Length: 101
Ligand SMILES: [Zn+2]
Image (cartoon, rainbow, N blue to C red; front, side):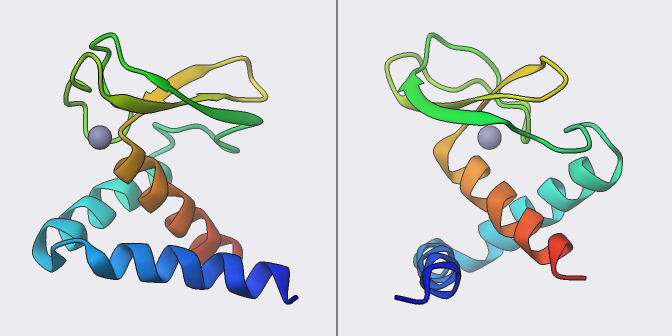
């Protein structure tokens, strides 16, 4: 039970498994992208996992290595973005943070 809470704990635990410094930088980048509007107002309507064909990540702007998994999102404004799974995870964390204010 406690759907929302356990969902957030899962994010927290995943974030804590990643190297700290790296993560802090990436989270700052995610926040910057969000606040600057680069990722749109409401980022996604649908999100699903796929296999990369070498597109660039909407958060960190680095190529997602072809053959690796990626997250694709389709926004309400019709936008289509691709993310590293880790970048998308951090994005979800930041969105939850911002939504709580
Ligand atoms: Zn990325």
